[in-house]
Image (cartoon, rainbow, N blue to C red):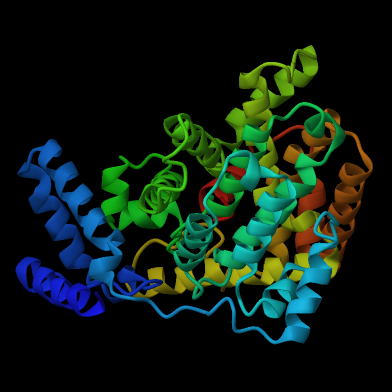
Length: 429
């Protein structure tokens, strides 16, 4: 059987002339941008429908594991017994806001996303309830973890595992726990695990100004989020995880709605809607549409909750995301492109980036979340947020003074130029 697969693989490659893409590769690193732009311009005469078909075919080739070859895997079973035991002990406290995802990832030999997501699905009884095939589920989770780029300092499988753990904490909050259905919980966990799937480590403006094919495919709108969603759907179909369920189409559609909500450029849109619901006190979690909206807001909070974690965890995330920003800025400098906001290491520091992000993006969102769910966890998050901001301010006196002058009412999003720059430049989406 293996010989037949290898022969077929060689024949297909020779027929299509396609060189498999290495998983986790960054195709933009070796691109001659002048050639890239000239190709895009020359393609202007080609009908749009034909271009879309070409992109779809390319994506099919890139996503086909037969053509991409067999990637190097971290064997899930090759774990020291002591480490495995420690990992299991950590999972007993998976609902703690102090959960150290970095330690858990080390204890699981870099398989934190697989172990944590599988554990949560089992803990909620979703595997049995939805009669999920254990082999298909494990294969799906392994493929999801593989399709995150470990080269990314921030947008990698550990970030996905961290967001999934945060989502679990929110799902346990009284208002949600009393109202959400098992289907809602399944969607919430899957969306958290796949929300940044196949993230290239650069933001949307970078893809647009380099004429990346994904930007053209999704018409410069929620480019990354659409790609994350479509990639997740591709893995669901490849593994046939939900093929036995009559709600398979609904799962794919609602999964997309959740992932698309993480687009940071639409932050004010979702925040204004959330604030209006809270002002009018008309959120009824007995309605499926309202529960779905709350899930969207929960995922948004989970996605950017790093500043609300304890300092020793939050600081690591801040360093990682800023490293990714600056790496993009270095690429833009190298190719003489306009440097994206927050990505210039000569004009920004970790502290200044974090203080601005907390002030204009995180604080407004979590202020409204606390209005919705004023619990011990919510107060804990706000407490960490305040302490972390003060810690960064102490490291950046000038940024501290400017941020205090620019602050407005904590619960209201501002439309300062800094806010718009953060929305454009932030990759925490």
